[in-house]
Amino acid sequence: MSDGPVTLSRVAREAGVSLATASRAINGSATRTVRPELRDRVMAAARRLGYVPDPSAQAMARGRTAALGLVVHDIADPYFSAIASGVTRAAEAEGLIVTLASTQLRPERERAFVELVRRQRGRAVILAGSRMVSDDGAGAPAPDTESERVAGPAEALVGTAAGQDLESILTAFRESGGGVATIGQAIGSLPVVEIDNSGGAAALARELHGLGYQRFGILSGPSGLRTAADRTSGFRDALASLGNGVRDDDVVPGEFTRDGGYAAMTELIARSGRARAGSAADVAGTDAPRGDDAATDDGTGQGSHLAGADPDNASLPEVVFAVNDVMAVGAMAAVRDAGLSVPDDVAVAGFDDIPTLRDVTPALTTVHIALERIGEAATKLALGEPTGLEATAEPDPDATDGLEATAPGSVTVHGEVVLRASTPRRPAD
Image (tube, rainbow, N blue to C red; front, side, top):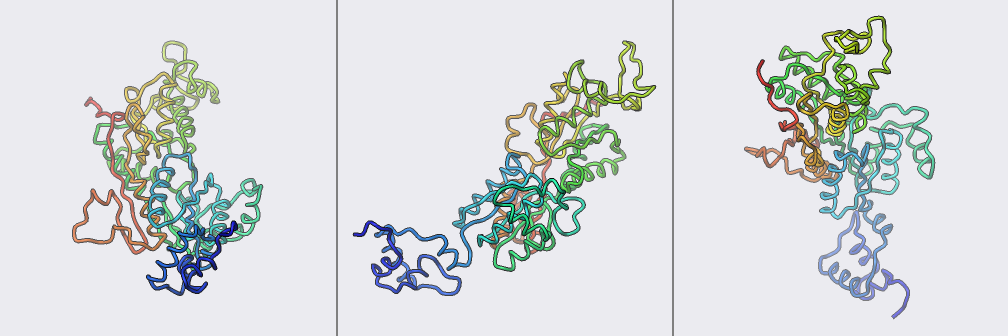
């Protein structure tokens, strides 16, 4: 026996078939099939000889590789890692391997990765993450000068994709035979698993109002991010319909991260004058610009609120809604570091129900989203497979876990409010 690698020709001779038949049996074919008995002979011969197929040859024969690209904003965020878990599980069931890219909200990297998947003849690509409020159908914000400064071998791909909007790139990939799905908001008419962010936040607002809360704060996330904007507006609109609006100065933006939530909550506490002396929130209040009436006297000679603040606002909201769970976790840490407690001094709620919440104390009230199921559904949409959510006579809500097939190639996800210890019922006055 030769010490060199086993060739496909040798497999063909061993199986007693032509080289073309052996290739179609092992590598597949976009246009030709092989009779089952011949395929079994070829595969048995390949196993006996220890033949290892050439992935490039398989891709050429089939028209596609066995790779599925997944693009997320931040893989360190448990929201995206849970979605990735669902994508990976569904992809493995189809014999595919997932390639992951994290963009850190850099749109040119998102476009470049889709272009890379297209050039490598990937089977499909899934984009998970929010679009921007300013989107005009392109599906991504216009890149700034700094974000275009990309070093390394990906630079050429960034340049290739820079002149095209995301929808055009995805549409071209799909028309060439690749599969596409997005998670979050729709991009044009491409397949989408769309999350009802506004509806989930509205349901949370109504539940918290029903617990007796009257004054609400919002850590509203990054300005311009569609998910953050929809959750903020849904929450505020629901409260307004109940005759309980949210004050503008009780809404604080911040990054969609744990540290972003910490900073936003620290600012909100500083505005209230409730922070313990020397805490981060106290320092934030001290550093704020002051006018002639910067503070009111509370009998101790200490200012009770920040410059220009309305004396009526010199207190914390009763409950603060952070528009995602990682921000809420950061907010709870800021409350502790300010010498206060959750929920005794301020209640906190989030959105997403990320897996790591099981280790958070007190347990966080949130809006449950079936993150792994979302990943599975998006994978099936991208591959053109049934999602299992197709219309039935009486769909089982427990089985669908909030997912609903709303149109061909479209799934809508409805959140479920989960009340926990971070938002106890308020005692009646």
